[in-house]
Amino acid sequence: MNKAETSSMAEAESEDSETTTPTTHHLTIPPGLTQPEFQELAHSISEFHTYQVGPGQCSSLLAQRVHAPLPTVWSVVRRFDKPQTYKHFIKSCHVEDGFEMRVGCLRDVNVISGLPAETSTERLDILDDERHVTGFSIIGGEHRLRNYRSVTTVHEYQNHGGEIWTVVLESYVVDMPEGNTEEDTRLFADTVVKLNLQKLASVSEGMARDQHLEGILVDEGVQKHAGLRVAFSTAEIGHGGAYSPRSDSSWPSNHNHKLSFATVGIVCGGGVRWHHA
Image 1: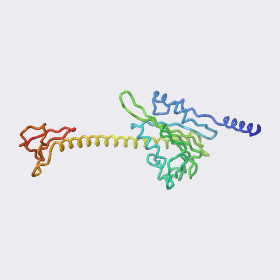
Image 2 (image 1 turned 30 degrees about the horizontal axis):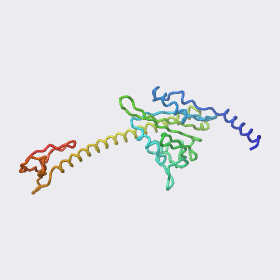
Image 3 (image 1 turned 90 degrees about the vertical axis):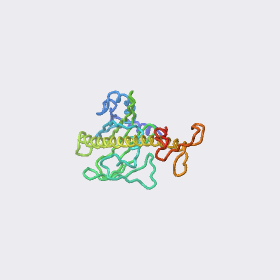
Image 4 (image 1 turned 180 degrees about the vertical axis):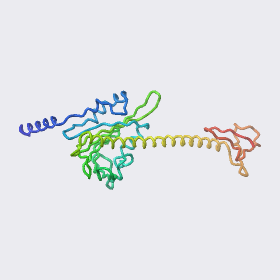
């Protein structure tokens, strides 16, 4: 590369930096966050939610608190192939046969009627399962959101009382459609993102409740199963469908008392209370 080419590239980069400005989302607390939460998230906001905004573009950052653990929320957010799970205005989503969820993959989205859009072709730009970051760009389709790019990050919190919750941050940058002001564009995009985040909270919290209930039922089932094993390992089936205790040293020497099926005992938490017939 000669000096002329190097100089030309440097001038182009200089001109580009002069026509764009970085966003300052890390300086303003988005609605819904507390000051301590925002202070803890400031680094992530600077790293993942900063854009170079040029003339005719706007950007925004929104936050949503979700009363569910991070793994539950992330399991919904990361599914690039199933945005309709929590995005209100998506009628359907199509991915190619043999789809693999990796950076660069595409999805074709059909939007419900009533919006200034019909279809959207979107590309997955980032998917980090360790840091819980994902993002996409709109690269085609029939819509008015030109050069739309979005990033979503998921963060878990726990207070001293043991309560766990998750904060989801979603930001975007987009061109302002011709004839629309920055305020118009941001109002429309913010409303869509806000409604999606609210539905994400509802879906995730419902999943968390179901998981909690399943955990309770599993625990109870394990306890009951363990209790039944104790009951049946301590008794044998006798003649006529009756139960009789095993002949081991823990039982009294007179084995002439039998346990009927109805009075084998009450099994509770792995323990057995025997009733002699």
